[in-house]
Length: 280
Image (tube, rainbow, N blue to C red; front, side):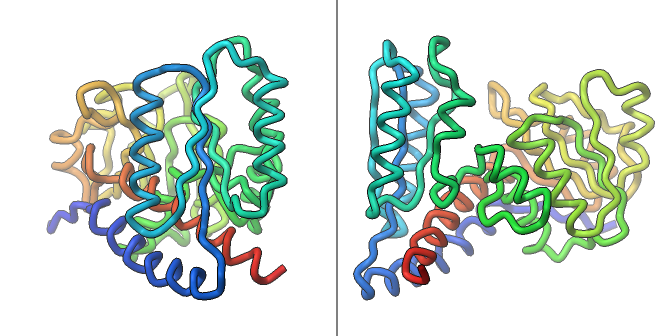
């Protein structure tokens, strides 16, 4: 059986090349797409992620507005910053970097983001619209998984997809997107009984549990497609790659799989939001 390595770098490059053309068209019409990123505190990993996202924006011509608030920031102060960005017509996307310091009500902050600028898919309204099939900006990692599936023409209709993980920005929305694409979806989690037996039934496995090498090779049905959305310390995914590779017909590597496409989807959503301002 021929193996397909689902190359996220290739998919991401394809997306970004298309975005450069769209950004140029928008600029000719007087609109420069702008993504505002908010970092609260000094978490080094978060700072690295924000910098990466900013650099990715600039490479396709999107303006990156970086806002760094002190770790002592309170919820009301953060809400005021978000409201100012909501009111700023030159800003098309708002990203609040997770996690925020403990004193901040993160969910309240997420909910305060204008739905038109929720390009990271963090609001409950955005999630609901995604589940109902008309959301404009799904959470970026689920959107990336669907983008990879579409790029490689992986059949979804009628297939059994097993999602391992139920987080509000990954497991739940990707289950909804797969269901909307006519897959039969089973969503599993840490308390699922007989998890290996359920995964063995899957034509498509989405690993989103946040545990390194969690999904084992003997859990995988021959010929299954594996999309590993995990990213753990040491550049390790949620599936035991070598063992699962033996069984899979297609698999994403870590790194270089879902991750690069996730950032590209953030850019894609920001550009789409900028395009929407011209239509309103």
